[in-house]
Every structure is written in C-alpha cells, then in structure tokens.
Length: 366
Image: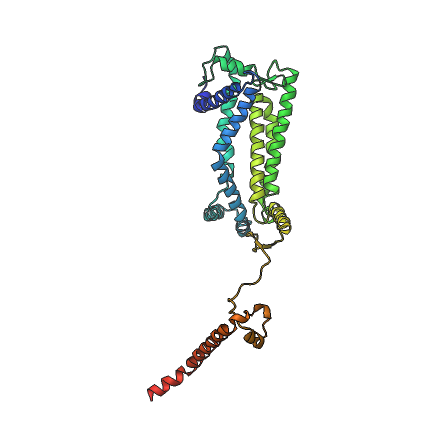
C-alpha cells in the first residue's frame, strides 16, 4: 500500500461501504449483480456525498453573495491604490481588503469549499476503482466491505461494453472503452462549463462583472473544462461517471437556487420579477418593487383604510351630503340622531374648553 492510499484509507473505506450497500440494495430489488447495479451505486455515492455537502454549498452561495455586495467597495479600494506598487501600499491594501471581507462576513476562498471537500472523495473513488482487479484476484486486501467477490462483480460491470475500471490510456483499451471515455469526458466538461456559466453570467449583477475577480472567474470557466479534458483520459470510467453526475447535481442545485433566490441586480432577478409579474397579473394583482432590488410585494386593489365611519340618520345624512346608502334605516333615525348630536356637542365643548384654558389660568392668577 502506498503512502497515498494510507492517507486516503479512511475515505476509501467509506466510499467502498456506500457503494457495496447501495449495490446490495439494487440486487435485492432484482437487478443483475454485475450490471447497472454498480453504476447506480456510484450515482448513489454522488447523492449521499452531495447531501452531506449541502451546508458547504449554502456557505458557498452566501460567500458568493457577499463577494458581489462588496465589489463596489473593492473597486474603490483598487482605485485608491492604483499605481502604488511599494510593499507598504500593497500590505495596506490587503489589510483594508480583508477588513471589507470581514465586515461582509465573506472571503474569496469560501466559494471553493465544495470543490475542496469533494477532492479527497474523488481521489478515494479513483483508487478504489483502480484497484478492483487486484482486490478481485486476491493480490490486494479488501477495502472495507469491498472484498474479492464484490470487486469481481464490480470489475465485470460494463457501460456500453466498457468496464468501470478501464480508462482511455490503458494498454489494452478497446474501441468501446475509448469511445465511452471520450463521450463521458465531453459530458463532464460540458456540465462543468454550463455550471460555471450559470453562476457567473446569470447570477451576477452588471456592476460585479467588470472587475478583476469577475474576469478571473470567466477565465476559469474556460480553463477548467480544458484541464478536465486533458486529465480525463487517465480517469477510470467509474470516476468519469461520478464527476459527470456530480456536475449535473451542481447544475440542478444552482439552477434551483438562482431561480428562486437570485442575486440583486442580476439577470436571474429580472427573470424572476417578470415571472412574478405574469403570475400576479393572472391573479388580478400588481407587482411593486421595493427599491434597489430589495424584494417585491404583491398589492391587491382594495379600498383605502381610514377612520371608521359613524352611522347617521337620514336627516343628518341629507344635511352632510352623504349618499343614502351610508345612512341608517328609518327605525334607527331617532337614536342615531341623538347619538350624533351628543358626539358633536362633546367635540365642540372639548374644543371650547381647550381654547378657553389660557383665559381661565389668567383669571385664577388675578
């Protein structure tokens, strides 16, 4: 066992445990022990890992939002120190920049947490699949529940004629292996590109697109697929299935978050407001912005609320010019007339007493 396997051995054990138990569940449902049951077990591994990484994904979204919010302040800071290349100025700029990040509760590295957390799992799965032939023939010890029998079944599983443990550059790679590998590499690169494009182009406000960090993200959007395309020829097909599936999960997860909770000022927010406006129009409501992209409010057409209108008899309604619909019935005219007169006299007396209060005070002093 190499030092790399020694470091990854706990994660390799967990990966093997999830795959073997998922495989056993699919076999119990009547699937072939050496068929798609192992391919689906890799997909189950992705689902389990991504569910466990949801807290990191939430932190990533919050960090991305925080980075977008502080971009105007970062741009002002960069203009402030523009042309100053001395060590003191650069250190002062870094300190002020970190202070801005701390005040917003974010940092530039939080957006990389899901990728960093998945890297050990990715390499652990790589090592498990790579060593399936050795485990199957007994030249390598079992990895947790992945014993010789399970390894032989996994080794015998194929995707369109290509074994899960095979890769493009292996010495005896067949045409099926190379074709399936190329298709999976293209799918992996395409899903990676679309995921990054969805995040940078649709969920970033226009003010945050013209700065060095945004340009760097756009560059990475094109660089990462090229890196995966070059290195993917060394990955087993099972690893390519894992990475393509996790890219699809990321793309769907980001689509849901961006659609329902977009960044203020982004294209995704404009699309969300248009959807809400159409939905409100179908319900006979109107959509009003609450300023600066701070949210929206549905406002129904309703009569303005004010002070409760006092009932009045027909005679008082006629004198006040009120429509007869607001007047009370004839049976209540006398009672309402008296109550109205008492209320009017009470208000009048209170006003007179209030106006005469200073005069009474002067008379008492005399």
